[in-house]
Length: 527
Image (cartoon, rainbow, N blue to C red; front, side, top):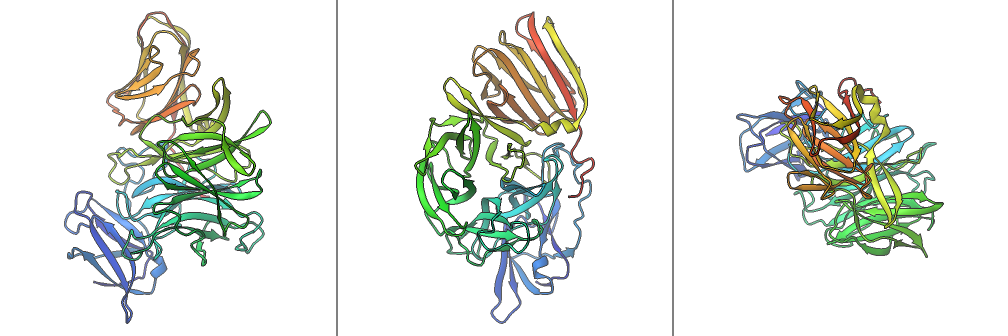
């Protein structure tokens, strides 16, 4: 079929149960040049929903479109998405970011740029399964309420847009800035050979930049800034390291190996060293803390295994063995925000839940503040919900200083909740929440949920458990964030209560606080 692009989107009818097809678009020209191809579960007979593909960059051009395997279909165009009941769908998360429609995974390019938080993310606008990687984009002023923006990075002849990071080029060392403020730089992996358009290409590290505050991005014409190092190298994280006076790129190489590269101009990179994080891979993050007047750096991988180290003699020198922060397979690829003016380290992770919501299967985590603490066995990392979450508190129930002689039950509404439980470290107990049971086992020093086990305490002095409950998840933080996990739990609102039962009568409940959270979709401030 032939289509002349006159509007912003083409609307594609999708059914998650249909067979995947490849849609190919050629520009009508003497040599019929391929300009775009992607995989989708196209269904012209009985679609479940419509995906919207931004084709504004082809406005005014006539494209030829066909599917492989071939089928009969039509495409319509529109300037606005028709999404009835948006953010009110069954199982849509109430306090976690999700795109309007489509697949989401790794957070990318997290940056606070002149008072606005920018969150980019791996995004498939063509359906609710992984593939066709773009960089989605959302902005916020409080890290809680997000406004979804236009797609920032589209696949091209170098590949699909894999994960990466963002910084502000404060000194304009790249020479790409045109204004009084430094340009916003996006560093990403171009994943070659994932599309027909990028057939035969390898994975390389590339750069895009914006001189209008992140409204639009231009890909650097000198890409790639780092060619192939190893076959699967990907996910560049860029930071400034004062101790060596250079920019540093942490890059996943292969197996459990990461490479550290340095640059003075953010364009030319040289290998500094290689490091291993046992049983870890992908999506490195790197951030600095001051502890007892000394700078410590945390290098952490996608599954939250991390090293604490220092820069000494121009190299990263680990000071600890590998440690584990998260104890769940549902958290992945955490990334921290650059440009934080208040000195905090804030990060978010992808929560890969396979939710039953038709339009979106995954969500981002609650933003967490990261801290480095000193312990008897050396430094360790903590992750805890940001203080700003209190802005969502709608009402509160609280119990203080009670001896548990019988089960305690609190009525709940169909809403998200922030719950904190502090008890003496004695007998175990169970916490039932919307039909799901967390078993607090002090004999094994863990919170048990099915087969998952989350440590409770580093010193076994008290039980301190915090739970953020949303439509399809329970985020559990123990010992003020020393241990945490996201649990896939579809809340059953037929069972609207919290019930706490102690294994031994007389167990001291120090505090039980239950905050109902207002939905972030109530009123979203435009940024």
